[in-house]
Structure formats: C-alpha cells, structure tokens
Length: 347
Ligand code: NAD
Ligand code: ZN
Image 1 (cartoon, rainbow, N blue to C red):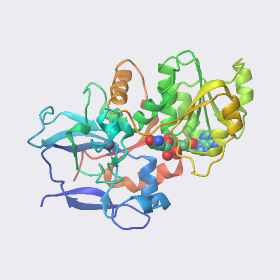
Image 2: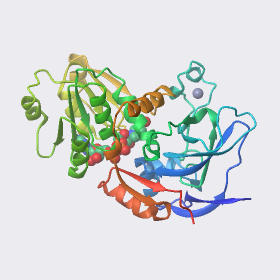
Image 3: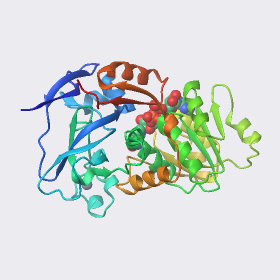
Image 4: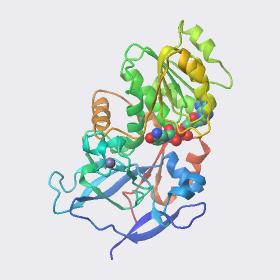
C-alpha cells in the first residue's frame, strides 16, 4: 500500500504525532485531494490536548484536521464534474442523505452528520478523500491561503448573515478568528456599528486591523460607555455570540434592544444559565448556528471575497507541516489568529 505523511491522533493521550499512514482508497463517488495548505482550528486544539470532549468523540488512531485547500489528484468512476489538478476545498460535514432534512435540501441540519477529522480521517495529511458532493470548486483568482480557512470563514458567514445586518448595530462577543471574520462580514454587509469584545489584546488588535467600529477589552471598558460614545440609544440590534463564555452571553442579553436578535455559534457549557426574564420581557430572538449551509454559505463566502471582503489579516502565522507542534502550541496560547500549515513542500 502507498503511504503518505499525516498528523495522527495515534494514542488516547495529549499530543499529535507525525506518522506515515496508507493513502485513502477512492470510492466510486469520491474525490482524492492532494493537500496544499491546512489551517488549525480550535477543535484541533481540543483533540491535541485530549480534553473530555475529545476523549468521548475521537476514534484512535485517526488522521485529524478539517480546514484545507488542495488540488484534485484522482476521482471515482461515478464522478463527473471535477477536473484533475483543479483547486478545491470541501465541506467538512458529511451528511447522511436520507433523513428528513437532507431530503428537503437542508443538509446543514442533518441529524447523522459525520465530521472530517472528527469522526472520520481528516486533512492534516498529503491526501484527503471525500465524497464529490462535499467538494467546493475554488475560484483560482482568490489566494489559496484564503480557501484554507473557508471552513471557519463559513461558520462566521453563516452566523453573521443569519439576521439582516444592513444599517443595524452589531455586537460580537469573542474576537477569536471566527468573531473577527464575522466582524468583517457584518461591515461588508452594511452594518452601521460593529462592536467586538474580548479580553485578549492581541486578538482585539487584529479586529482593529479588520476595521471594526470599536474593539472593546471588557476587563477595562464597559459596553454601556461604548454605547454612549457611539450615541446609541436602545441597545444592539444583532448579537453574534462567538466566545462560548456564559458571561459574554449574559452581558449580550442585557444590552440588546427590545426585539433584538442573537445568533449563537460559541459552544457554551451545557449548564450555562441566562436571564430568561430579559429574553421573554424584551422579546429577544435566539438562534443556534451549526456549521455552514451547503452550499449557500460557500457561495456567499466566495462572492464576498470576489466583491472586496478582505479577511487576510486574520491569518497571522504560517508553518511547514513538520513544524506543526510549534503551530499547535501557539494556537493554544491564544496569541494568534489563524495558523496555516504548508503541505506543498514535502520532503
Ligand atoms: P476561540 O476560542 O479562538 O475564540 C474565542 C474568543 O473568545 C477568545 O479570543 C477568548 O479570549 C474570547 N473570550 C473568552 N471569554 C470572553 C468574554 N467573557 N467576553 C468576550 N470574549 C471572550 O474560538 P473560535 O475558533 O474563534 O470559535 C468561536 C466559538 O465558536 C468557539 O466557542 C468555538 O468552539 C465555536 N465554534 C462553533 C461552531 C459551530 O458550528 N457552532 C463551529 C466552530 C467553532
Ligand atoms: Zn441527514
């Protein structure tokens, strides 16, 4: 069997191992992608650290990673609409195709979805094999770095565009890579003010570069003061929770206008408590967001980049795949935006 280099969760303990594994078999409906660039996600850090979620979710051994761009190397006999050498990325949720939502075309709501690099082999490798229905055809005039972060850019897009933001005041809690990209999207989509919060100055610095109205360190400054400075009267119209921190959601709920809309992407602890009275009396609208819409979100992402949306400042570091440990440690420290691992120069 032909072998390839891959970052493998080899043992049920903290760490990630550069190893050699078999190149995946290509089924009749599959596309084999030669990986060019991958990027590190918070989920990969959970797997690396081997926290409780990872322990109960990740099969061992398994190749990890789900954010990537590459070129088509081979495809199965049933595949017609891809070309060898074409630049592609792909949706990381492999859906069942049979459940009610799948059959209705609402694939992002599939109840049996499987995650690339979570439930099945991932992209931190020389090759990745996925069903053709998950392939995204990349516009080659867009830099491949940008496509390597399309997966989290998609989370940001799905969340930021769920509610109409044109002319609205938007509050984003959490200036992680996804919060920062959501801020750029909200501006691009015509929001009046985009205010983002975090405790991490490095990340607030990236948010400033991307052009937010205000990047607020909530350890130092209150949102009420910011509202006054901006001459806002009634609270934020749209809230995007992107920190996963219950305190952030609580403060968001308290500062929304009546009838305000909140999209929740951040994964809150299951016992997180909120002030339900405010939700009810102020008529708030709260929507959970998971993944990306297939493929409406992907379409919007590519169109927004084509029409001038610039998210490049969120990419802060690049490493060769073999220096992955440096990349993982840096990502875990919080002092980075997106970190790209380069798989093009394999030796
Ligand atoms: P991240 O962990 O890199 O960023 C979260 C940021 O929130 C950090 O910068 C942190 O300093 C900040 N933060 C912590 N407490 C805060 C507080 N009280 N107020 C304001 N900011 C605070 O995560 P990310 O990769 O940008 O992803 C954002 C969130 O979305 C995470 O919770 C992640 O697990 C979740 N996520 C959900 C989906 C989904 O499909 N629902 C997909 C991807 C990521
Ligand atoms: Zn399904």
